[in-house]
Length: 167
Image (cartoon, rainbow, N blue to C red; front, side):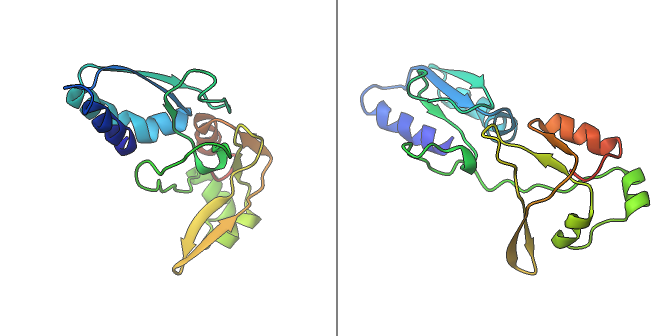
């Protein structure tokens, strides 16, 4: 949102108060994690700007489809787009049900995940998300496996809560 704020400030040189419609295309997880916490402050600061948010987890051509901007996770940035980071890096946690942990034990290191049933996150492109960790000060990426693969975070959490594995 800072980049959008900056763009609107540039526009304010042309008019006293930024106004108009700002159309954003945002994947659902990014809308919840990054955009939603900023919206109230943004509309309070720019009351004449109408923010039109379309949540869509698929890959679209932001310009062709009439959007002013989009938020994408790193995997989803088209090669011909200009990308800037929005917000701080978002940490993730590994979750499991008490029943799963009682039956299979808890992983102690990222590499231990390879011996567990993991619930895999798939991007709209079809690529599966490799879990990223920092272990002893070093970045570690683990391509986890499991019999459940979802493109929806809520389904992943539901399956983990029901004991299907780690998510």
